[in-house]
Amino acid sequence: MSAPPKTRGEPITDRRQLAAYLESGCKPADQWRIGTEHEKFAYRVSDHRPLPYEGPDGIGELLTRLQRFGWDPVEEKGNLIALTQGMANITLEPGGQVELSGAPLENLHQTCAEVHRHLDQVKEVGAELGIAMMGLGFQPKWRRDEIPWMPKGRYRIMGDYMPKRGNLGVDMMTRTCTVQVNLDFASEADMVKKFRVSLALQPIATALFANSPFTEGKPNGFQSFRSHIWTDTDPDRTGDLPFVFEDGFGFERYVDYLLDVPMYFVYRDGTYIDASGQSFRDFMAGRLPALPGEVPLITDWADHMTTSFPEVRLKKYLEMRGADGGPWRRLCALPALWVGLLYDGQALDAAWDLVKDWTTEERAHLRAEVPRHALRTPFRGRTVREVALEVLEIARGGLARRARNDNWGDDEAHFLNTLLDIAESGQTPADELLAKFNGPWGGSVDPVFKEYAY
Image (tube, rainbow, N blue to C red; front, side, top):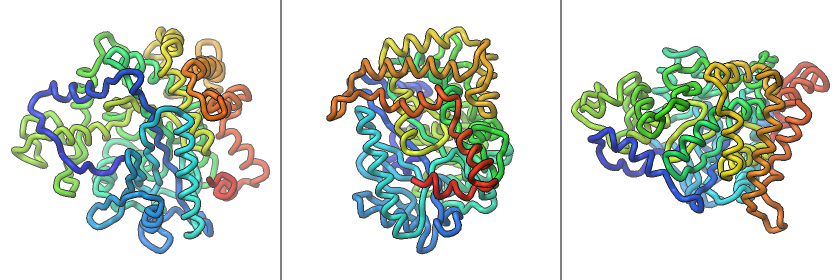
């Protein structure tokens, strides 16, 4: 999640401003960029415990030392809670997960270099502090009550509200990690097509990246428990958004959806004001109980958009949100998958042809079943594994046609190789973890903290 904005923008007096804000993200293809985000669990090497914020080996000290690499500090009420460098940010999730929100980059070679550089930096500082990091979809060992909370005002408000609307929202906040990519669109029509394709195919990504089979030291019966958690977090702000596939969908229809999402907070003068459960529509009418008589600013709308959590999220760009966190190769593979599908016209057409006749019920079936069965999920007389192989072939063609070559003349398609290995073998990352748990690890998850550290 991004750092608090420095300016608050213009007042909102007309609903059309909200759609215009989304529409302002439209840009020509030569200006499309790739923004990759990934979260990771930080822990003490000595006992594998998650890091508190305070202390000589805490998250605060980690952020302090990372500043040597040219990162600028972002504080909230005297606490260092984020770092920024140009268009990139390092931020904290509620349970101390460390997130890199990468800069908007032109190609996947730059993306992978950015990820590699960041992991080198956190590894250097981690070695000094006796801490390490790893990418999994769900915290494999520690209970919810053993996870320290970070000192950020919005998280206190969200943590209080979450249990009122679902059973697993606090777990989502404190015990999950994901990798995401943010991608651009040229027009409203282009946005709609990309939204539909990526929403329909999000379960395919979930299956390929499934990497969260453990809860509190034992197998949990899921391939992606992280993905399952979203089904019991808050029905007002999660899900696969069937209306995206209805005739007439566009920026205004998405605004209507967001206006129906209850608020969490309003940010004023360095403080997050609790507005949980209140209505942004009332805010626009000057009737928000938390701030009576005030109307929202455009940055309040930007904040509000970050509090909906569908599988694909629209801002001034589209966010792909279906994948578990993982090792660095898969941090490069996730943007490769979606760039290959969405940034080449021929690939986008082929992906749309694949999904355009999938029914609402079929998409819901995939969303419900893939977290447990991943590539083995039955679908239309075959399995998700077979669909994934077809999707990867489309994406590989898209990347080859983009022809963005590195200094050695290689295009971006090789970043998909790790996913091709998964789909061809039928063995997900979760399968690999379970095989080790039931074999050489002797029924313990502790080796994961050493073998899967970055």
